[in-house]
Image (cartoon, rainbow, N blue to C red):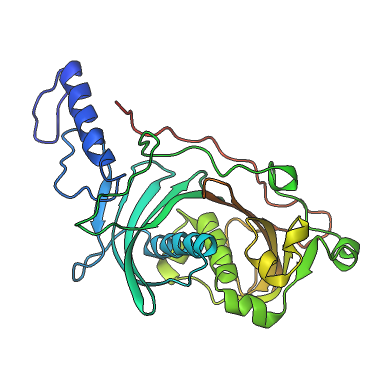
Length: 319
């Protein structure tokens, strides 16, 4: 067994080097790994500095929206309004479905803080991901904040849920249900969904997830979609008020939109075709946020895009 430099490792030495590397990475929960060398080929986290002049890094559209999603989770739980200022750096696993460890600067005037966000992808060509960490980074004079659980580079799982917010995504609700069950469904006014920001973010994440690896959107950029209607499904007597529904920890978001001209994952072609998307948000008691989404076909008799998860790749071996 050899490294990139041709150095020979016995199996025992290989295991020891890998173990030492991951123990060092775990000290910062995977965020601050500069100076930690991975001595073994195809083992470790890939590091990217977003601030270096002219530095290019993979999937910039996705990385930015993962950062925004982490701030969104923090704002819901803390009642704040932090907005992304700059991306500083990120690390990612080498899996086909990756985990991203993002460091960013955010502002909620007059506050400005450095944040750490961790996003674990759970499926390829499908929106299925979990935000397990979204927190301000401690100052140098403060003790570093780390998670209590053992460090795992790629997390397989998601936020816990029950009832209609677990299992496969639902079908598109009937017109009768949308019109009659006002306790369950809430149709947003245009001003409401425009003010949130996160509804557009969810839709963009769904588009990017389905296009991942196709190189279309990566080359041309996100399309200028136009949202037509948004309905939120929640459950619980405390979520009847609009603000409670918008910030509900468990919700299905039904979005009708136009502007997606072409996608290998969709049947309809044409930017003027109205499309539907269903996205589930679950935030459990631990604070983990999971998003699961799919496109829904408008054509009569067609089945929705499958919400079944693809086989999940295993993360690096941990010692």
